[in-house]
Image (cartoon, rainbow, N blue to C red; front, side, top):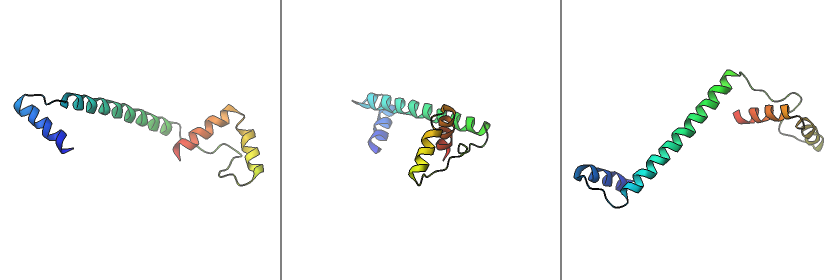
Length: 94
């Protein structure tokens, strides 16, 4: 980490580009762009879930499942795509 800082300072002071420093800087910029995009995506998701209100577990379901009958009931309920979507939304906030 210190070497990157030192090489950046030397580049700016001397006006010379050290071997490999351009690649390092390009990698840092690319990583920063990716992180910024990921952060914006997460913020959009969080603000979207706040607008829709409280997300609850689909009706008639409870987790964790404790018996084989519970597993069968969950599988039956998950046959409906609407229930799948509700469960995914619920799981995304816990």
